[in-house]
Figure 1 (cartoon, one colour):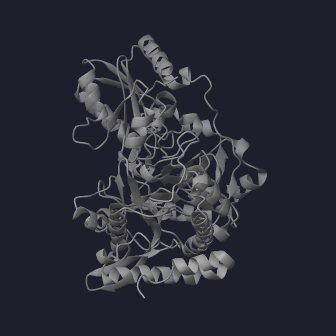
Figure 2 (cartoon, rainbow, N blue to C red):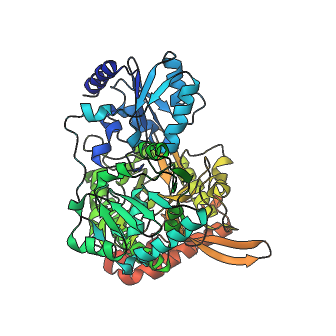
Figure 3 (cartoon, helix red, strand yellow):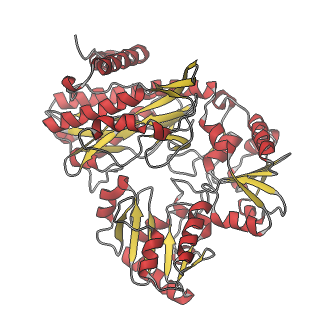
Amino acid sequence: MVRQRVDAMRDAMRRRGIHAFILPSSDPHCGEYVPAHWQSREWISGFNGSAGTAVVTLEDAALWTDSRYFLAAADQLASTPFSLMREARPETPTIAQWLSQTLEAGSVVAADGWVWDYGTLLDIKEELEAAGLVLRTDIDLVEELWTDRPSLPLNAVEVQPLEFAGESASDKLGRIRESMAEAGADHLLLCALDDVAWTCNIRSTDVHCTPMAVAYLLVGCTDAVLYIDHRKLTEAVADHLMSEGIRTAPYEDIRNVSGAGERFLLSNATCNYALVDSLVAAGVTIIDDNPVSLMKAVKNETEIEGFRRAMRRDGVAMVRFCRWLSERMEAGELDTITELTVDERLTAERAAQEHFRGLSFDTIAAYGPHGAIVHYEATPETASRLEPHGLLLLDSGAQYRDGTTDITRTIPLGPLTPQECHDYTLVLKGHIALATQRFPEGVAGTRIDAFARYALWQEGMDYGHGTGHGVGSYLSVHEGPQGVRHTWKPAGLVPGMTMTNEPGIYREGCHGVRIENTMLVVADGETDFGRFCHLEALTLCPIDRAPILLSLLTTAEIAYIDAYHARVWTELSPLLDGKDKAWLRQATLPLTP
């Protein structure tokens, strides 16, 4: 099927005089997870990871993706015309470099400007032009070729009530307009769906695992317009929007927005190329900034308390699942359980909790060698049966009306090898090192990333993904601009931000280890040198003690684990009874007598 689609695309390219076509993973809202209508990169290549860019020329085809998907992409692309390009490797050319090496000068490269963020496609355009190639951004071959393309989502919109949002949409608009005035802007254009949802206090199910509606928001000095398909709005939701000072217009009318001589605040990273390019052509001055992303990242007290409640319920679900799994282990019944069974059981436990709205991402239940595939997702064809030895890497999370959860635990299923225990303990040391740091307020996540990697680095080991990403409040489980990264500089960390702490290690063909808690940035006093912060674990679930090599832990590290487990017991035990409570008691005992 992939070969047939590539052949059809090449025929269309020849008819149009195009020598290469580039397909990203994104959509007009530059999101990580996109509705099926815009999953064109997966449609053309067969690769279903959340990150990747496919390029088709008349003779070649290649797909770029990051280290999280190297193993999965290699497998999925094996029988296709696509070669795998491993991003950030010294030997891997950029897309523009590869095209300049592959095509003759004067060749035409095409990309649909509506599904690229402005900054990225502008950089590619400049690189291609420097190499003597031409980039066209007004062609969408996918619309022509994808005959059974899914329609745009039409899921109903609901209001996120004040009891969970903590701030009205009108008050948020007031803060936004203050930022606009400071920047001297006439308008703020929001394309990112989580920015739109947060500002308007609305949620929907247009995006897989992420409660957002497909829409744009244009904020002026005195008005605000939500561009959305009216079929998604009930009368009550429409009335709510009007009462907050937000009127609505058809989704496609965003193409008619103009404003010669006016100044627009927007993010080049989250607004699509076609829209921004049309504004520039109409005489609009662009200011590359988006105050909403930082406002959204700093949670208010209502949102923080919502996180705490959601984490307790999620912890209850995790404990009940872990107790069930331990009983299967003791009964010698692991061979009746597959990776898919793990997903189904844990999802059922979460679904039984109050305010559950769905998963926050597809569960990663990866046993043994599958744990080395960072974003592995089991299918009926690939799902392994569990065995009474080795490690199960379980990365999962849920959307609750009052918070979003993300947790990883690596669970021993029986005897472990010395290497498995050693790797587990080093990852735990990295997790603790980041969790216990005190750092200046406003420091970027790049400055503290090394703490999580230090123990691994000392033994010549590392992991390719970031150490932490922001987490939304009943929004995207991958939220910016906060995070802990080593490859780029995220926003400075300030009290109220939520993010993950998830170092790992992955040995291809053997196992993977990752330990993750969602954390809250908390104020930690002021000195002569400024204000300081620390991280508080929001996630409440035991970290398995069996694989830990105590000889590798310091007294302070042991004390941290014991204190964390004491807190888990204190907060979760009142919500449990019977076997679940007994299991939790054993799982949270001190590491040393």
